[in-house]
Length: 108
Image: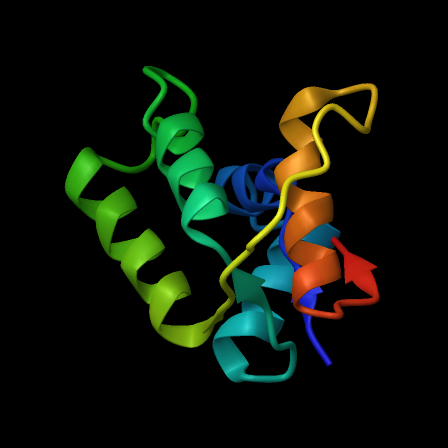
């Protein structure tokens, strides 16, 4: 069983060591929580985390290493269909599609 890590949770967990988002990232790193990723979601992770000033504590190389680590820990899922537009926020459609493809009951 997989969870899908929403980009906002990734960013919040990297911005602060306090709170649930950081605990989710720790659980992924420890192997207590399995996540699935798709190419589209990883590209979104890259685009958002590289926005200037968003993650001031990390340089571009550190962000790349963090995303590489997430990719190493995650199960890679291909998505062969698109349900767009489906949700009110079109950026969330790729998360929904991945959740369905990976049979993931949780979007975090």
